[in-house]
Image 1 (spheres, rainbow, N blue to C red):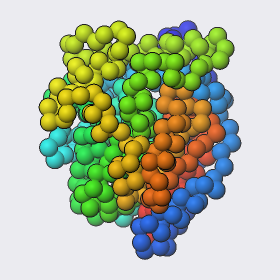
Image 2 (spheres, helix red, strand yellow):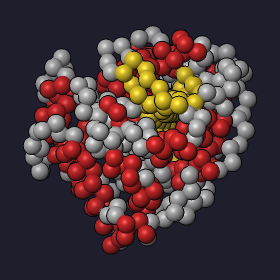
Image 3 (cartoon, rainbow, N blue to C red):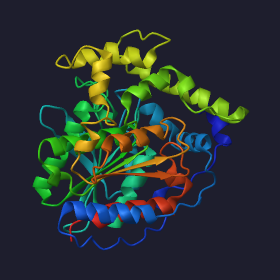
Length: 390
């Protein structure tokens, strides 16, 4: 699907890093974190989104994003090239960075220096991608132009950590890694830290918000946590990828072809990460959990159901326990991670005022920035801008 011929017909998407950046709103005047969060959530709800790109078709957006970043996406599947595509050379303000985390790997990435005293925002990629993926760079550059310090990092078994001894954990350890990185950065710079995660990264940043809250360190992430199209119910995500009848159905020949080929690409990427295991054809993702993930975490219960139960963010005891300003944004037309993930997170959060869900009418899977660039910049500026320290 993502070959030369297909890419000839893919929509030419406009990147966030090419748009004019609006001014940030003033920091919220409230001293207490909850009051600041509520003010930010209220303004986010007032935002309107209007199509500004060449398409809002969710599958064409995925196709356009993939074709625009074809070389990097393929390179990110092989340990000797993953996370090494020189995409950041177009943005010389970003320089390589390494952050050791407690009881985990040394996280690799790039960072830029923002205005003095400005907050830090850590940007986290999606499944099978890395910190040099095109959409990660676009969001990072947009945040840099707002004046933030920006850090884009690789997750476990992604980017330069692909094939390392630290196997993925469905967000459990990744959330702790991100909290540890945020802790290190805020101690070094003395400023607030926020997190922006997309797709799988969106799930991991919500886990980090929970870990910070459980450790009594909500202040470490007082800059806010923004999750975009995150698979917050990991069990449902894995079941749906193994039983595609649970995913939204594509309409029309071209869209069905795009979706079918996209899922085939994802399966190939999964098998490249199997660490020598022969994954079964009919239960690929569950087999990956059983054969690759669980053996790498012997302290976790050796049952898929129990492990996935603990890893789910959209459940009582997780989302309702968060004490960090956490905004969950999800496209209603997301074909890969349906909006039910956000709705389940909202239900699990109950009356927790620190967690807010905003559904947007279009954008597909992490394609809102391509479908409505100005609206997406407004979202970033409103949320992180209002929460920044005065």
